Amino acid sequence: MHADIAKKLFTVDEYYRMGEAGILDHTLRTELINGEIIEMRPLGDRHMECVNRANTVLVPALMNRAIVSVQNAVRINNLTMPQPDLVLYKFRKDFYKGRHESSDVLLLIEVSDSTFRYDRYVKLPLYASVGIREVWIEDLTNNRVAAFRDPAGKTYSTSLVFGAGESISPLAFPDMTIAIDEFLGL
Image 1 (cartoon, rainbow, N blue to C red):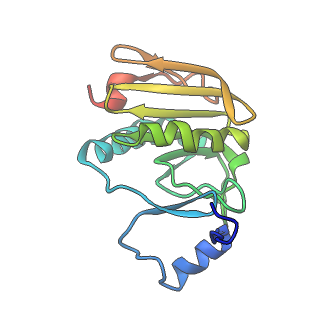
Image 2: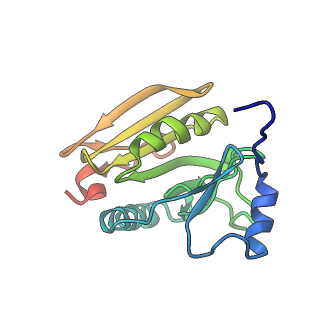
């Protein structure tokens, strides 16, 4: 970037105000990443199917144990508020009146049919930087789930891949076993 040109970065509060004022087109899916408003790709059929599958698996299994939040924003810092596909939050009876914080996240799930590299190399370091304990990226292109655990700076010290015929358990709920085939519709 040239010294005489400056980029305007938006804060989370400014992003909210733009949405409330109708400045952001409500028909477009956007998220705020490092102060920039990013237009998200439209959801494909398989993407929506896998989000619905995960929701159907998680909600009954975690009733009164966690809050399953579907495609809602998570505040990472003052300049970043992505919209992951699913988030498991610590259970609270008030369902988090106000905004969720990254410290409340037990598990964050991104479903990726065409955005795996973006989710892996742009968003994942942001999640690690605020200590989100566990992130799964459902890689629909390769029919697998990449699990990232144990945040350390802007990365995760544990990285695992689960494919067809295998199962995974969230760190926060080791008693829960999820078949990858069921999650991905294989």
